[in-house]
Image (cartoon, rainbow, N blue to C red; front, side, top):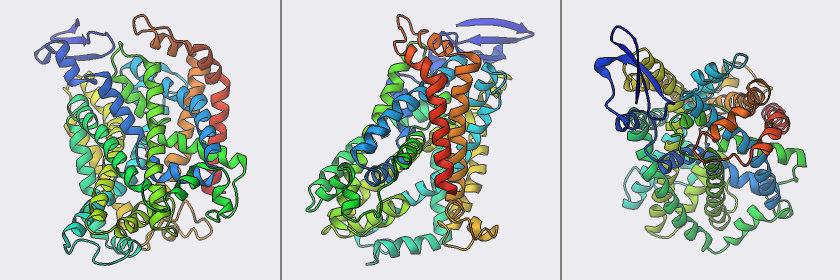
Length: 513
Ligand code: PHE
């Protein structure tokens, strides 16, 4: 560790790798490498990977990917998705990890440090994180409610379904605003407590156990779903091109442009890129870890889990609730609950508990990455000003603000309670993005801010600071050569920005078109 005196009692401390820097009074000085790891940064590459994959794996993988794949051409969609993941996802992911690790700072300060023209892009990311959190916490709360509901069903308790259908249970829950708010707030508090625990003590610990557990639970659910009679139709829906149209599941096949834009939008949201999560996590990564390898692994694992989620929900839906909703919140909370209702005896509630617990895990590991993106900036600043860490205080303040938006989303109950944006703002002709507060916040964050953030980031790297920055950062790992550099350079300058424009256009069209 290097110590540089700055003035009376004031010193700058450098981490062993030289990336992290903090200014403080000598009294508070750090005791060595171990403490650095404890206070800032992941303890191991596995921990980092689980946290990053945890951020990527979320509700989008479960209710978005399988349905979009089925409705947009099965295998054809998968191939287009993978191509986009290589020419856009990989480039933006690697760029963000490199920016984070190079600067050692959260999104806002990182953009400030490396760019003149794009200084403010970090704020766009933090704004996206805020908005996504608002509905993510509400939905996470719904998942906790469904774990409890299935526990009730297992024991025949009054807080179970009481013989109601999935649709009725969900309808009653949405209009019970108090209950919705309570569950939403429980989820916010859960997220806050983990982030308060710090990067290695909270996030890494949670994801290091939670992600492998999620994987195992998913495997159990896949085995059950795929062995149900009639499950094969779910597999055909998901994989066979044209099956969905031929069998009347969807009315009309989408055009190739629609397929590309659906795949692009899904890929972006699913990989948690374009908004600073990966910059923040990258800033906690040690110089000895390979950035390229990590970027590839995150993408591969996220796609794998999305496919596995499809193998779980689609066969179950086609076998046990063939007329049920096939995507979005209704798939998760109505169709899947009907699936568990129609399994015999205790098996239904038991699988219900496992399934909704795995969704809670997926949602929490994403929401902690969002909260960390907001909090990191203020924690860094406090440290540099020598005020110590103040992580708990900032996590608390950010959570209160997020809780306010989350309460709005819960009270709105997916537009069931007469306070949807279109009703309040008298927007009759503009249904879709203004149907409910969830869609409204989703439109701004997922529809506009995230693809815009990704576009601006590639323009910044490609044309302002130069792709060599990413090469240098990758090669800061001893003995590592960035083998993808020629590809990265061409993509970052030309191909990715063009694709990003296309995705942005597609997103706007899907929300407003
Ligand atoms: N990737 C998450 C999902 O698939 C959502 C998310 C987006 C999480 C952006 C963090 C940042 O559900």
